[in-house]
Image 1 (cartoon, rainbow, N blue to C red):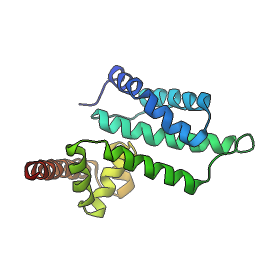
Image 2: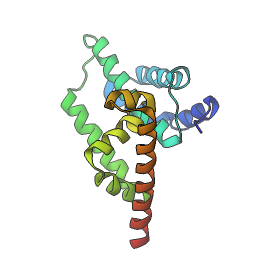
Image 3: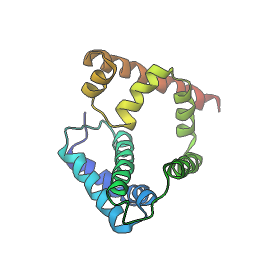
Image 4: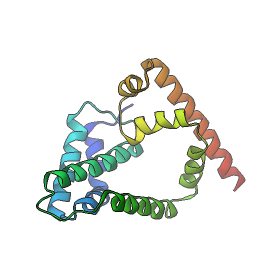
Length: 171
């Protein structure tokens, strides 16, 4: 069951500092980062997007904050000195690796299991959860029916759960 608007906003405001920081890393402007956070929060409840759980919401929000930050830089490129795209990618990679180190064994196991997922299945997961697209959008993007996407995602969820459980039981 998708998260309701109140729950979405509660989760976003709990992660406000992290999401604003993701935007600030790109724009280097505290007020712009706050504006970006507010835009992301507004989009989360006004766009035709649904989130099944907090993780999907926060992944979508982080990607959205980064994209909005990049758009902000493009609009204000003559006003500010921004970082080059390759530097931004390096910072993002470093942040992701530091973030992964602070995660518990369940997240580490999930990352290992995700690494083992075939490329076409991984693409479905990326579209759905990291880009925050609806199943209808995923279906259109990959040229499949919505029912097939739901079925493939359901199968992937089961496989990932079994993989994570297996890795945790062996450690």
